[in-house]
Each structure stands twice: as structure tokens, then as C-alpha cells.
Image 1 (cartoon, rainbow, N blue to C red):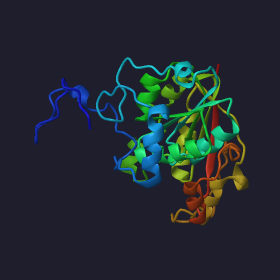
Image 2 (image 1 turned 30 degrees about the vertical axis):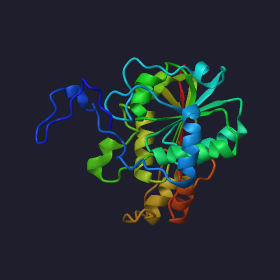
Image 3 (image 1 turned 120 degrees about the vertical axis):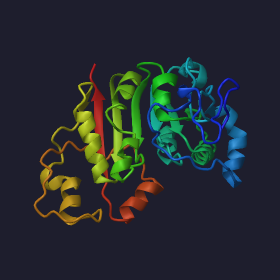
Length: 285
């Protein structure tokens, strides 16, 4: 972790004197190793200087300093629609979408360097010039780095569900996160969500349905017998107790987004017997 000279780490056994050193909210990820090997290390060496954005940092190497703003036209060398993927993983969804939509700019937001390096391998293999990435905490990217009304769409696919109730506060999708998305999206912009855990899917639906800034693109759809939530609860597909009388009368689930390729992560969830929940919301003008 790189700390500017004016910011002091806490002495062992004592709190740091500068309260601004700490995050205002718990982050939605656990720190993992950044070590790169093999093809990923080679791709990173060749491409990082061209495709990885390095904002000035405030706290850690995944933070964004106040006053920094992303200049899309300067970075991509053109003016084009921008799609942001938060939690791009190994880059499968973004590289697939960018390959088929070369008139659109794509920005990956990911905290794990090995994932970004895997994306760089795909960028090289597919000769993609419309992809950039940043290793940073998503809320800070939305609050500080991205300009207001700059993104046409924001994709959040399979963010960490944080299963234990005491950890739900670490989930990315919660009421305090929605205004950040609203700020960055253009009027009429779309948020696309997907998860393989029903409890998190319900929370996503609840949070966005409660927001006056967003409208569900599929209200009431895939309710009742057609709802994956009905199936999960009735048959105990997530190893919970079966509830034969349960029915999801609310619905509102989107069809599978055709622009989302089947990733290794989603394939693993399907093989484990889990069902996928898609949601799509439009920012009201």
C-alpha cells in the first residue's frame, strides 16, 4: 500500500490520528494478492501503460484521490458512448462485448490485478482499442473519477453476495450506492444487474424499486410460476428449507441480457444448480 508522506499509518496498537485515513463505508471486497505470472504478467508488461488508467491515490492502491476526473475523449482519442462494468472479473464479459461493439468505449472497474491482467490478454488477442481499465474501489470511481452524466450503461454482474447477515452491509448494491450510479449515468441510461443468489437478487430489486431515480424496464415480468425466485424457494435450490407454498407475485426480472456472454463464473453457478437473476433499470430523465 502506498501512503503519501503527509498521511501516517497507525502505530501498532493505536488508531491513526487522521480520521480521513479510514473508509466512510465498508468496502465490498477482500484484498487478495496482486502477483502476476505467465501470460498475464507478460500481457501486463506490454499493455498496462496503454490500457490501465492510474488515477492519483488517496488511501490505498485501490482508492481515488479528490480532484481527479476521467477525460474519456483524451483517453480513447474519440467521442463515443461509454459502458462501465463494475467488477469485471477475468474480463470475459467486457472483451466479448467490446469485440462486437467497436464503436462503443468500455471501462472496466476491478480491484484485483490478476483479473485486469486476464482482461489485458483478451485485449491483445482480440486487438481491442476500445477498452480501458482501472484498479479501484467502485464507489470512489463513481463519486470522484467519472464525470456526471458520462456513461450510457453500467453493468454489475455477479458482485460478491456476502451471504452472512452481518456482512450484508458490505454488499455493493444498497441504498447508498444508487445515487452514485444516478450521478454517472446519462438521462435514460441503464443499469444492468445479474446475480446467482436469490437473497441478493431480492435486495437488488428492493433497493432499485424504492428509488425514484430509476424505473424497472420489466415491471411485473417473470412473476409467479415463471419466476426463478419461486423455483428457488419452493425447491430449496440454495440448500434452504423448501417452501412449497411460496410464490413470487412481484416479478420484475429481466430476460437474460443478450450482451452478456456466458462466463466461467456463471457456468460454474449453473452447474452447481443455482439459477440466475437479471434486473435492468433505466434512469429517469
